[in-house]
Structure formats: structure tokens, C-alpha cells
Amino acid sequence: MSNLSIFKIGVGPSSSHTVGPMLASNLFCGLVDKQLGDIARVKIELYGSLSLTGKGHLTDVACIIGLNGIRAKDLTISLKESILKLAYQDKKIYFNQKKMIDFDYERDVIFYKDFLPLHENGMKLSIFDASETLIISQVYYSIGGGFVATEEELQNPKKENDSKKLDLEFNNAKELLELCSKYNKTIAELSLAYEEQFHSTDEIKRYCLDIWSVMQDSYYNGANAKESILPGSLKLKRRAPYLASLQAKNSDPLAMVDLISLYAIAIAEENAAGGRVVTAPTNGACAVVPAVMLYLKSYLGKKFNEKSIIDFLLTAMAIGSLYKKNASISGAEAGCQAEIGSASSMAAAAAAQILGANNARVATAAEIAMEHHLGLTCDPVDGLVQIPCIERNAFGALKAISAARMAMDRDEMSTPRVGLDEVIATMYQTGKDMDTRYKETALGGLALTLKSYC
Image (cartoon, rainbow, N blue to C red; front, side, top):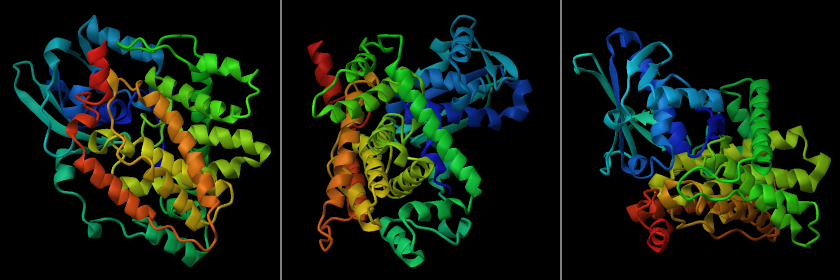
């Protein structure tokens, strides 16, 4: 499949808990579209991490919006407000924008602490007729990064020989580097050639530039936000507008560190506020890649041109695809190492590419960044993508830049003892070994400690 969807335009605060459930609800609308005449009621059942941190991540809200037939990329503030007014006050859902049905939040949205068997993020959608007879139900899993799969798809995954045979294909870093060597291409060039099997060159370039445009908008909106308090129980104050005001008079020799933090915090706060962001590869880690890109734009000036932007994103999505294929980009499945760690790894590789590193060093930059995120837990306080998530985006960006520079400073003749494939495998195994309390359930770690002191 194409890797362009590693970056997708969505809304905050979470790709797996907001964007994914919204998409699942959209798909469910399509599933029952031919039976609209019979439906009178819809039920939303949330399991595992989608339940335990669902309210903080607006999972219930996302499902309601999705069942109204609205997609994440088309959602506006006014549209969201009208849908929620219809659901909460009028007790109705305009199912798939085609039929008005009754809806009672207390009755029709159910949170279970149990986990479904195939993934930590499970949900079940069901429709009933006027006599309360079940018409259709479907189990969906939100598998990270806004991607979803049905129960049947996870139980019966496509076999390799069922898929379209591609002329150019890579499943791990070793194969990626071998193909680059065989065709004498950079990782960015190889990634472009791979995508050209699915899209025209113009479509790919336009997609990348659209993604970059939304990333910049997210930063601008976060840095210039008028609301001072982020939504949710923590009543956390936005810091980006104040940090932005300090930049004009910042003469500190380490001012660039503050600037990178500003980039990341502004975007992460915009995500936490439910604003429009790019999953990169997830919403929880949405600020790492754009913060590094904004840094390069500031550092390189006019040299960070249209080609640089496209090459950066193509490199990042190639690396991101390796995590998606061989490990996980879901915090509920493998902890925050799968989100911030993957994003930092992608950004490090892409930065090294733009700064002129050869392919081996680009892969080394990706490996270094992930190596120093191994074991990172996902313990959001009150299930909100705020503490510790916002600051983690800033550290993820800073680590990415450091990893790129470390990789480029290596002796030409030195060979890393740990490769990118090995660190990806290690991250996934670490995630599987991690206690459930530390995988986006808000049942342990900082989430529990902070509650006990409040």
C-alpha cells in the first residue's frame, strides 16, 4: 500500500482514539447505507484503552461525529458544535447525513474496562430497528495512526500472494538500503519511486506540500491561540503564545533550543485543543516532524525549498512505514515509544537526508533516535493528550536533531553495532512486554501518581 497515509490531515487530540474511531464510524455508515429505512437506534461500545482513556481523548465525541457521516478532514468548529448540540440537547443523530434517528448518550454509549482480544483499541457499533431488533453490528480496532481494521481483517490478514505484486517493494531497512544501492537512489528518491506505483508524481508532490501547509497552519494557530486554557479536567494553560512572545527578545546562545520547543509545544497544544493537525505518524506525536521541519526552515533559510520539503516527508514516510509494518505506531499497543519514538526516528532520518547524509547515515540517524526512546511509557493524566504528551513532542524533536547530527559526525569507516531493523524489533518486543497500565490506559505511571497528589 501507499505510504502517503503515514501523514494524514485530521483533528486532535488522538489519531488512535479520535481519528480512528471517527473513521470506523464513517465506515459503519457505509456498511449499513442500504438499510437506512429500517434503522431507529445506534449503539457505541468502547473497550480497553478506547474506554479507559476515551473521554479524555474525545473518543465518544469522535464516534458521534463519524456516525453523522462527517470525516475528520472536513470537520470545522461550527459543524462540530452543531452535531454535538443535536446529539446532547435534541438527542438525535443525523445518520450518515441521510436519516435522523433517536440518540440517548447515557443509554447508547457504553464504556467497558474489558479488552477485546485482537488489539488494545477495540470498539463495537450496532444498529437496531424500532422494535430493538439488531440489524447489523461490526467490531473495529483502531490500530494506531488513524488506521482501522475490522475484526475479520485482523483475524484473516491478507497473505502476501493475495496482494498486488509491486515492481519496487521493501519491508525492512535492509531491503530499503539494498534497493537504494541497486538503483543508485537516495532514500527520498526510492520512496518517491515506490509511491509512483500508486500515484502520479504531481499527486505525490502536491500531497506533501498540502501536508506541510497544514503543519505550518497548526503551528501558527497554536502560537497565536486566543484561548488560554486547554479543554479538559486538568485546566492546563497554553504556553506557546507566551513562548512566542519571548522569541523576539531572546539573545540566549541556546535560543534555538527554545525555538524548537516553541514549534513543538504550539502544535502539540493545538492538537490537545482538538484543532486541525497532521498525524505524523500519530496525533499524540504530531508535533515532532513539523518542529524539525520548521527548525530546518529557520536554519537553512532559502535552501529549505520545495524539493527539501518533499524529500523530507518522503524520507520520513519510508522510515515510518517500517515501524508500521514491523512493530507498531500505537501507544495503546506498545507505549509512547511507538508514537514519540517513531516520530523522532522518522524526523531524524529525514533531517539527515536534507542535511546531506548518505543512506547508511540516514538509517543510523533513525536508529539512534529510537534507541533513546526505548521503554517510554504512555501514561496520560486523565486520558488527556497534555501531560506528559505536549513536552514529549518537544524532546522528541530535539532528540531527532541530535540523532541526525550524531549520525553525520560518525567516522566514515565506522559501522554501527545496532541497526535500524534491530531497534525496531526491540521496540516492538519492549512494547509487548510492557505492563498494560503503562500503555494508554491512565491506570499507572504519571497518570496515577498525579491523581494521588491532587
